[in-house]
Amino acid sequence: MTMTTAEADKILSANFAPWVLELGLSVQSVEGPRAVLRLPWSDGLAREGGALSGQALMAAADTATVIAVSAARGSYGPMTTVQQSTSFQRAVIGSDVLIEAVVTKLGRRMAFADIAMTSEASGDIAARASTVYALLG
Image (cartoon, rainbow, N blue to C red):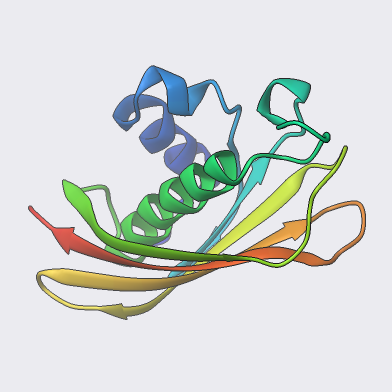
């Protein structure tokens, strides 16, 4: 069963805390075990010096993983983050960020994903993350 972007957006709006929704994330594409979300630039997410905050990028990566895992499973089910490791490579200033999450292993109880966060303006990787999720239902 293929998940549509509209179905993925519904998962996003129905299952995340209000502060996560305030990031303005939107699902750009969903294909198999892969999801791409857009984190729109906002001065409110910038830290001193004008760069996008790492916390916003980490929350976006975590959120994109839920969408990718849901797509890989064919529907949303309860899950929780077990581990997330993020490496920041360059600052993002004044640009939307595309968050691509790819499920690398989907088991019955655990899921693993790699995430690339790319500045849309430059096409450069801003950060990479890896996540591990426990599948609860």
